[in-house]
Image (cartoon, rainbow, N blue to C red):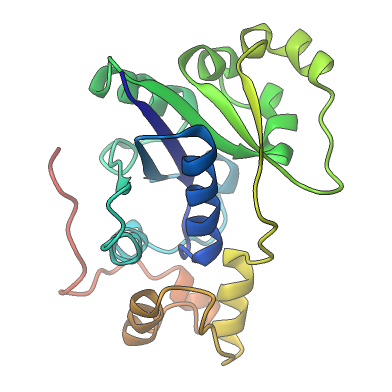
Length: 218
């Protein structure tokens, strides 16, 4: 039996903060691997502009190219509808029936867990590995009352405080500022080559470029 970390997100774009936090979780929890789970249609971002999935996947593939302990799960990318965590974990349970799943999240996300789609199913299917953040606290007793299945399944993990956000990177590109050291060099080159994030219109672009990777069949 292995331990798999599940790192969900939009990854628009993936940046060094994602990689540092994923590695901190992997080391602390002794995970055999971390699966990055890019959302096809993030339910909490419906109605907001989001970069087409092909681009987000391509950048993620470039960022993880030389990371043997990191991989991409395409269970959300290959299905329509909102990317609910409960449904994603159910699919991953089918793919990895012998492994323990650890869903990686922040304290702010844990606090909002009762408002998620079927939070009971989320807690039943995976341990909740939570990155501790300064200034953010969670009333675990209240959480357990709202989501009883979470009791005994929350693991608090101390991770480095990384002040990098994908929204800040998009804003920097739109303003013509440097994103060097914010993202892996290959990701920066991809953003420049495809003209991503230069204006709001870029974020709503839906036509894939010929050299954008296609979705693999798994």
